Length: 404
Image (cartoon, rainbow, N blue to C red; front, side, top):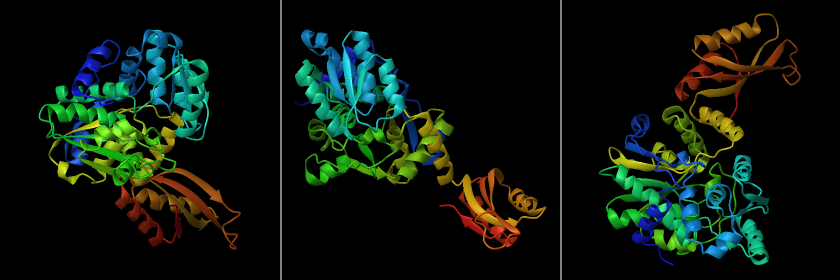
């Protein structure tokens, strides 16, 4: 079933009372580090932290009365589940969600708090979907696909309408791709109204669903691989989404996991907003130099969600600091006599670095009982500063083993 601009406009009117019009202001710091004029469409500001509310509310409002009474079910890694649970509660429609076992803890607990019935089933989206189909048959529930239902795609397309209204003279929109529903909806809306605006999709190197579908000419199933961008790990793009997006999306690029981690860190530091891995991919593509033709142009980044587990965020920030050259770890051999550690500390301080953590390792420091290995975690300014610190330590007689 095709989705048209008229469908998206109707969805925009339909959901207006329940879904926020999120900000899309220019980010001066992100513009400075990327060379483009960057506007962030902050759909992580939705009540449940993601753009998925748009499609969820639209699909729920479009249900026949009998199905609204019985309820709906979906397989989801998280954000679609949250959107359905929240708007189902507002609209009085029971919601059941089957989540795969890798779903982030924050999304599971939040979905339950919002009133959804959560079932953890399956190792991936396909297995979770199979479990949901069983309940569709046994309980008479309506299945709402998270990224391929036409009403979902139309709802997600409202984000594109808002960007066009908020950013005059836009040159490009950079959007994450998982199942494809978001970029399909945006591309239908934008290309119908402003066909010269470039639509660019971004995937993780660990997912690659849309690029694989383009190569094959149809959706294909990709193996599940661990990724920070768990919202993109759908294993395949939707058939409807792919049919709508394949000739409207101008290019697709992929970003590394290290690039995603660094983009999350940049969003926290510079934009003062928390984003999940999927939402960071758009910035990661610009930061990695994947889109050099956008320098000096007006670019909207789709910041699609902010539901990242706090424990994961903490680790991601530390990994981002490492990738940014602002945190380094090495093992140095020092004298175990008085003054040995002080000598090492003086060299580190003289190089302008700061010791964050230090631990002694005597048991595995070799045959010399007068020496000890110390494992040092040190804060630095940038990669050249790390190189200078290591050079200074070696120059002063401290052999190093650098952690990678």
